[in-house]
Amino acid sequence: MEKRKIENSELVLTGAGQVYHLHLKPGDIADTVFLVGDPGRVKLMSSLFDSVELRVENREFVTHTGTYRGKRVSVLSTGIGTDNIDIVVNELDTLVNIDLEQRTVRENLRSLNLIRLGTSGALHADIAPGSVIVAEVAGGLDNLMHFYAGLEQLADVGLGAAFATHMQWNPENSRPYFIPASGKLVNRITREAYFRGITLSAPGFYAPQGRSLRMDIQDKQYVEKISSFRYGSYRINNFEMEGSALYGLATRLGHEALTVCIALANRSTGEFITDYQVYVKQLLSEVLDSASGDDE
Image (tube, rainbow, N blue to C red):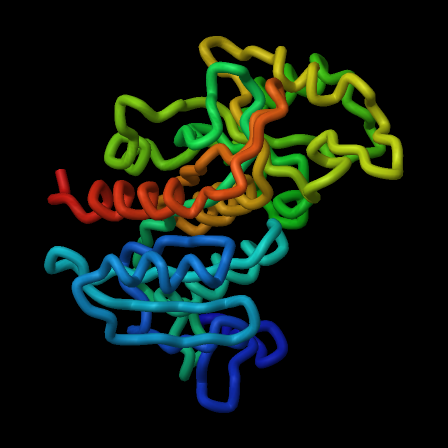
């Protein structure tokens, strides 16, 4: 059977043959890619590498590739939001699994380790600002994965239904979905002091995370209800804005994905740390060490 050739308007490339947004070519990325929201964190993380071979920048997407302890690694900034994750994961997959000259999917598919290192707001008093949270499950309050076929096969339908019932979810809002992380990466990255559980990905920073400045939110008990939700041994530990799309897209495309976040704020106690760079650098260093260990 003849392979489907992907149209120019679907597989969009630059004049130099790079993927359109990331400005990268095949071979520019390693099998392990660390994803950070803030472009400034790319330089911070690559400063921990033993060497850097590649630096590419376009818009908010900054990529550095180098080596650490003899292994090739990449770090890439995504910017904020699930819409940016849609661009990043699709274009990273394109680099390794699509022949850009023939515009066809490769016979032998390559799996990447996509490890997001971010910041978040914790929901429980026992998670002090500066704590590290591993998202064993990402819950999507966004609508992104509903545009792709096969969400039902990826998501934990029982968890999603229990959450919607507990929240008395407004049917006019996007239906929440919950997708597990890569078990391999959870086991490799998680340390004893890290918190584990569900992380919620919100489609915004203010009302979607229960914040009110000059506009009221729909549900005045929103954060309290989220904090009280339990599903077996799981509770929802924190809010962020990218993990659900990362898990959904990566799982659908055959990649391993994990989100690990520093808690900058605690919504229960009202605490917030502004001088958080020391915590971020420590997280980057710890996860780099864990991810670069010998394969099991």
